[in-house]
Image (cartoon, rainbow, N blue to C red; front, side):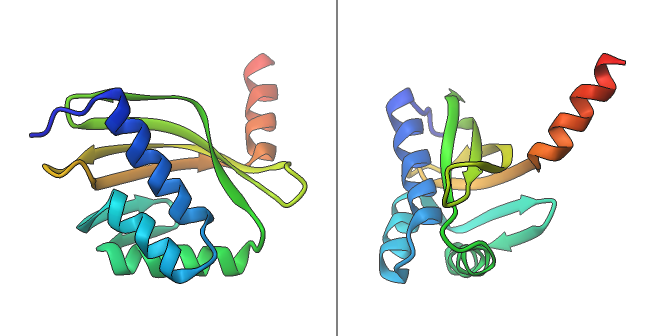
Amino acid sequence: MRLSTPTDTDRVISQYLAAWNAVDTVTRMRHLQASWSETALFRDPMACQVGRSAMHDHIARCQASYPGCRFIVTGSPIHYLDQIHFTWAVLDTFGSELLTGSHYGELDATGRIARLVGFFKSPAARSSSSISASL
């Protein structure tokens, strides 16, 4: 088990989201090499990917479906030992939120992401659940 620090957590999350925002394949892979274990597991409601190359291809498919969108960190990332958590948003080309969510993960012995599980919802779903909760 690797003990992460706030600096480690910020660095790995920054590199990971830079991979999501990189349109150039070489740049995307460079960011994944810095943040993503060769055999890392990624799961969210829409995908399950194993390995750095699979993650690279998954990001490319998402970018093709949503051209010009970008990921940002919202809030402050949290770490505990080798565990990380952060919240994020996807913004369209006008800066409007398309999707928000959170990721929970585990770092490997080198400080790269070994497992990441994502949860998300659209702003419309968030608004309707807020309305339901207030009734």
